Image (tube, rainbow, N blue to C red):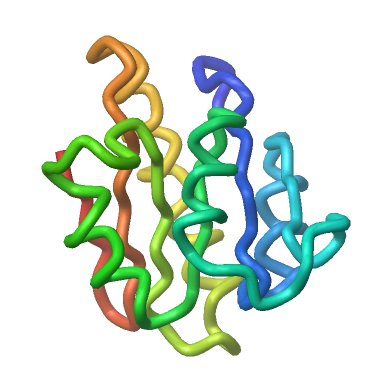
Length: 134
């Protein structure tokens, strides 16, 4: 983690490998793992989104329906307007490597969002691409 980056808080969805959380923690960030919480497994995505938003955490999701949820409720609409998302569109086996490789960009986008008056972070990490949405 570069010195200019404040510690980020990440909420790992239950489908995200623990190794992704370890890589983020090793970089100096705070991790809340859905898997380690007392919250029931298989809870619906809108509840996870609300928890991330309420705790000012970046939701890390690997599930395919997150793209539709973000389009329907997160991007451009009032519900979950402040929710930040790191959406992994890669194989689970490559998630840790891809997140580690994208971390400087993720931290840069976090700084940009913070300086832009609380705008949210929205980064998609795929097999062979990384995309930010501002």
